[in-house]
Image 1 (cartoon, rainbow, N blue to C red):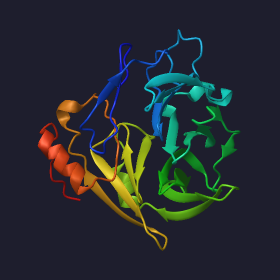
Image 2 (cartoon, rainbow, N blue to C red):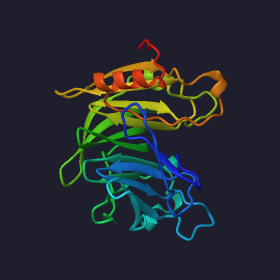
Image 3 (tube, helix red, strand yellow):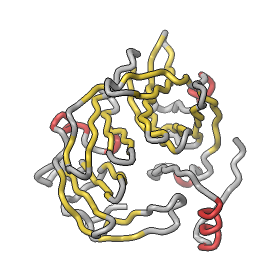
Length: 266
């Protein structure tokens, strides 16, 4: 959470513990935020009155100090905010993709610099690009319009040539659950942890579709109700995250008594 007076973030899987530090120098409303190693990176999303809308700032978890990085590439000037960018993190880099064009860059917090652009191109008519990281490998989820139908496909991005290998396709009955009756084009977003990709409609968050990336290829699909999306929260902005949670994390959350658990029937 970011305000002019402080920057608050949580690093544990269930977000039970939060820490607050001094805010970055640039005032932002919709930045992208990601952790890579000991660095928390904040990029883009700057307010109109700021000099650099592409500014990058890095908070070092060890030194507890801010530093600046190379500004985001100029090609992202018109989309340098979280609603228009999809991000993924590896153990060493932050990867940023333009959702509309698929133009992608990576940022190295060690050198504080950006790569040259590359385009994720699985040779499909993709209208919306979304990326994640599964076991340190880049995953692409694309919304395609084929034969007058919206289809959602998953690719693994491999090798130096960034070739895209198709893993699976979401069943049409689950695609329908992610659509909104109020909007012709339903905005999709994803979160990835381990070998599971979670997908949801940004404007209709009542249902979450999950796809498990199988070791031998293919995906196993199911959906679940989002217990947080209640009628009284209509109009509220929800922020999703996902993590691999162990027994120790669950026990710690129960002891803290500030987490509530609900059973979800998938």
